[in-house]
Image 1 (cartoon, rainbow, N blue to C red):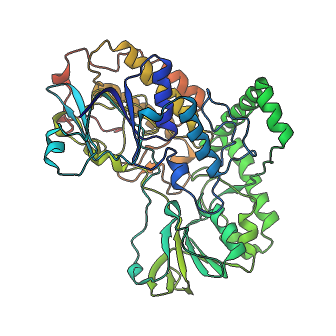
Image 2 (image 1 turned 180 degrees about the vertical axis):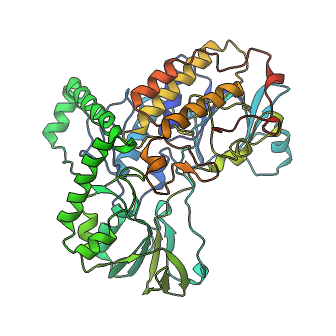
Image 3 (image 1 turned 30 degrees about the vertical axis):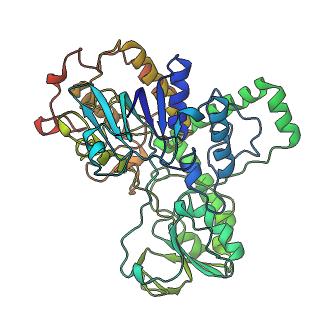
Length: 511
């Protein structure tokens, strides 16, 4: 059994950001639990051809760790993974890391007022008793598990009959030789538009199944020269100025994503011009044109997706993959296509976080049960019924216009501030504070394109119809909102009996 003050689950941007915040505050009694073989989260798991970030590299990093060596405007996946590894070394976090260690369960021990986190074989007697060597006992639990970790593969009739390589984009099978093969790709989202151009260059043919087209704007961006990188390394203020400019550009982009009519119209015209410039065939252009408002779904960045689609190497199928019959892929429009390999670029379980099933709070209520009508929180970070627990990059903590790393750092700062002021007391979120915050989010989201744009997106929980993934505002507004949290969101010390269980009526979001 290991005893620590803080147990952090996950070692991607969020987990490392939290560890750094704790250390800056003089807190050294923590451990980082990571199920993978290395740190990196998304950027460890996603290794598909063409994987890269669509947020400018000098904004997609921790503020305290500027990186002068990014290769270009948009960093490749392996660069970001290496960057996170370098942070571990710079912060001397190796001895705090427990790699290849999965959280199997975590429950709040009301008698001892601690979290017990099991990392061993499920069902082992010592683990269940909370006393084994594979149990971590912590005053505080920080969930930094990521929101895009568990691949989502649709249920498709006959999928088991496909005999060729079959995998999700986030679990890329590098042993599969797709050169000269007929490859099917399911999905046209953020991963697919990076994968398609790469496969189109090497595969015999690619069949792309498009259920819903996306709004796509030019990616642009340049490679940084050796001189650029040298200047960034020797002139920190140049790097700071660039980051400030990128931050301002991102904040300005919020208007077009959220529903400002003029800003959205201007951004949509850019997307339409990009489509018209790269797809001369009006019929194909119509198939690639969304029928929902700009910003309703994630806006994508690409300069080579449309050229790939228009090439002879690609067949665009207007419809979802509905059935598989051996090597034959059947689309919703009835068309049939032969394939040797099949790639699912179909996203992740986003609104229903898999880790929620593993967490039991007061009264044995699981986080999944508490979130049965969609994720809720206060300050996008703390949850009623789950004492001394913080969730990073969870409810309403993502962005549709800028770098989510900025949000993670604000959450880590809030959590550290709260811990510094708790004085050994148990932190229990007042249910009404969570309810009020959820209502606040609902009001702010009501007029956004994510709610009114006429599409189905992964930001909105289908069970309640609430926006549960995105923060419906700017980064500055989030920072200001967390700064206004004065501690009144928590029940007075000894107020455990005042926290009703969900069955007794804990509010679950907007009415």
